[in-house]
Length: 111
Image 1: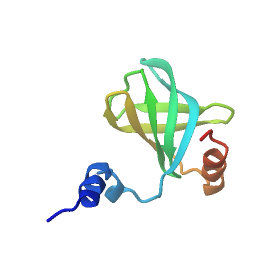
Image 2: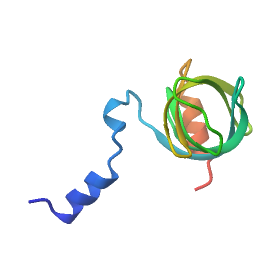
Image 3: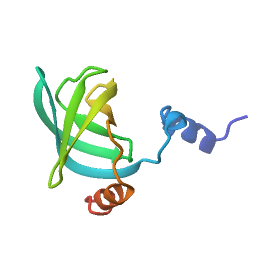
């Protein structure tokens, strides 16, 4: 029989976690997403790892589209949309980010 904690953990579990190669860190930073033919929209980075990130944006970017992600105050990175649920996108970076960059972004993000 499942207890209340088991149910809560099952509900909160991210189905993508089992497929991830790298740990994601929470990071709330302003960002923009741009894609050829689809334009640019602003949004917020929600979490990120060396290989990708989750971003909330009002723009529509279908799975498979190559995008340029710009995190406010930092450089731009190219990636591909690997999932899309409502206003949230999962972006896989074309080139991995250095772990020190990820730690800096996470550490300097507002809590």
